[in-house]
Image (tube, rainbow, N blue to C red; front, side, top):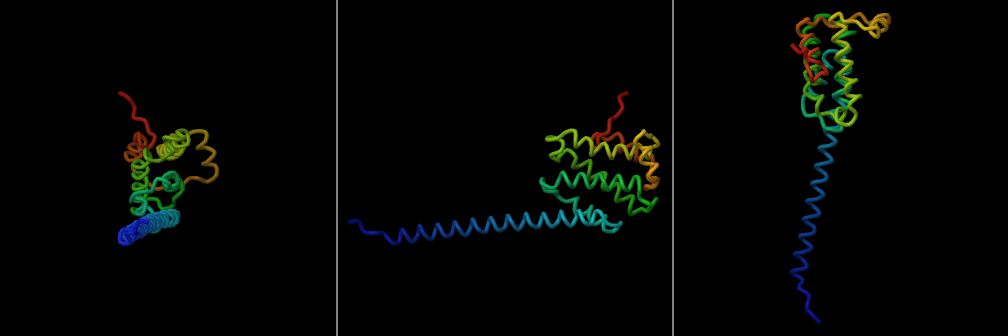
Amino acid sequence: MAATNWTAVGSLATAALVFLALATAAVTVWMARRGSQDQRMAQAFLLLTGDTQKRTAGIALLAGKVPKRWRDNALQLMVGQAVYLLRKSDSKARPDEVMNLENLVGLVAENSHLTPLISEVPDRSKTVCEKLQQAISFRLGEHTPEDAEISESGDEGGLHIAVSKLKEWQKNPALGGVTPTA
């Protein structure tokens, strides 16, 4: 009968325990990181729908890397807030809200190509950006029959934004705009 080499068995057991500990630590770190990302996104979404100061904080949180699983919702919320500021906000020319709108539109432009909406469901993504384009067109005085229905419901507010800025956004392909050909 062969003698058991207890030193080799002990070394193998130790290596297995070290591997198990490292794997457990890696999974724990991954879960904690994912949890902190989820907390950051939930906090950003909550703040973004608040008043000016909260909206500013929410935008700042979204300016960081948005995890892929949150991009669809983040894009829709950012567009929704931009449309609100363009069409309903009673803040008129408040510089902090104008800055919020400019930051939101910039984030939508930067992230619209990353979201799964564009690659997986093109019509839905286009619809999200179309809502922003409709609000921009409305502010430029380009009314559609759909706009008339909205206006009848009391949608007469909106931030005062320079026409040149609105036209810049209207032409931006990342926002669903089309640059006229010469």
